[in-house]
Image 1 (cartoon, rainbow, N blue to C red):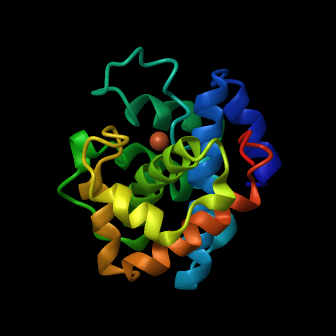
Image 2 (cartoon, protein in one colour):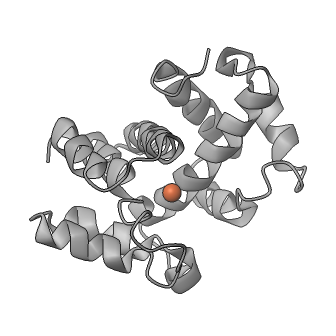
Length: 183
Ligand SMILES: [Fe+2]
């Protein structure tokens, strides 16, 4: 699936600018982590783009999250290589069962993207002022961006050293800063 095709499909289901930004930043981190691990960066980026496609349709019923996403993708003709990790990224249902790199990294990207964007917001929207040191410090402050689940970020430690992962994630989000309204 082409990136542009994935974005068109996403925008048929998601209208919230902040949610679209979250999908783009998660996708950017997925692309970077795939490249680092020698995985399929195009595939992982697409999974990131589409991972929350059901969010405006589940009306905060988190038991449906991922399940409805899988149905939307299935109806759109998107195959299991993309749709299955998206179904299973709902950690409230499948959280004890992530073993593949793509599933682990989707947990990491989904959470660390929010943490990094929140770091940029406390620096006046300047992502260029966010360093590995900034993110390390804010990770250790549970009240900061409390919705970013630190346990999901820590899953990535099995695959990539933490500081390297932060470095990749910051660089990838910086590369799309204009799309995210950051400086
Ligand atoms: Fe997400």
